[in-house]
Each structure stands twice: as C-alpha cells, then as structure tokens.
Image (cartoon, rainbow, N blue to C red; front, side, top):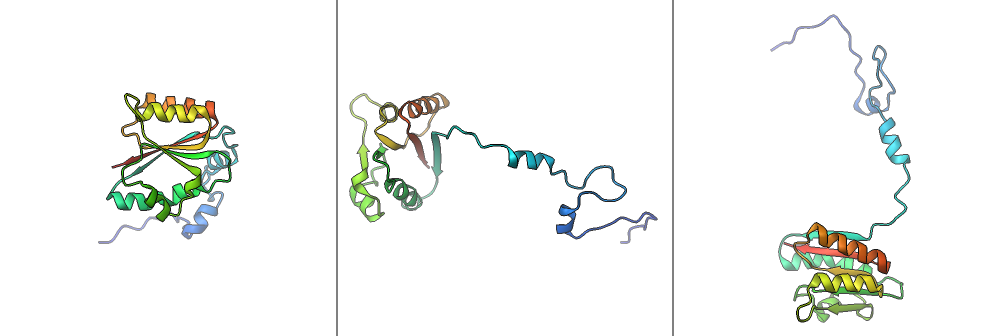
Length: 167
C-alpha cells in the first residue's frame, strides 16, 4: 500500500536532536516544552523530612526476608545513639536470622505486643518516646487514620516509622 505524497515538506530530526531542538521553523510552539520540567527540577525540596514510609513485599516469606535484610542491616548500622526497634515482626525474624543477615544485634530491640495492646499501640508508643531512630512495624492492613497516628507520634519522638507489608 502506498500513501499519497503531499506537496508539503516536513522537517524530520533524529530522535535525540528532536528533544534538544527549541523549535522547528514554521511552528508556533516549541517541540518540547521544558519549562514545566525546569520548574519541577529547580523547585526546592520539602524542608521537612518524611517520617513515615511503607514497604510492601509479595512472594515467598524467605524471598521477602532476603529483600528486607539489606534495609534492616543498613538501619542497624546507624551511628546514632538510639535503637532500631522491630515491632511484631514475623516469627521467621529470629535472633539467628538477624545474626545470619549481618544485622548489628546490639542496636536492635525486638518487641511484641502483650495482653490487650495492639501492634499499632506499641508502635505509636515506641515512636512517641523517641528512644529509637527508626521503628519498624508489620501492621497489615494499615488504615489511613492509623498512618496519621504513626506520623504524629514519629514527629513527637523525632523518629522514623517504617511499616512492612508482607503479602
């Protein structure tokens, strides 16, 4: 199949040059409007650090823990004088797993809720007290209201909250 030839001549630039060209002759607008991108790049970062993060891992428990190990290892090596606190971790997170994963067990506290206390309440209290630089919890599901409670508690205790969702 052949397409009819038109009498207009179009300028075609190689792909890379097309993004670099400010405008093509005969066009009223630039080929690539980069002003919006420049505004985003030049905009200052939020000066207030995020205090809550969530990590969702899916797959076999062993594989998820293998992915999680470097994150926890890095957090356990923090030179801060405060603790890395793990609240209600899965049963596979044992002292031997921590050792085998290369975590600094001298800077880690493992906590389980007791009695009527929930993992959310324990996490909120650990964050609020500020004795830990990071409090890692395994709360699933984590409703939006609970997330806001953790954010508020982390700000009070000048700590970071990391929730792990295994699925």
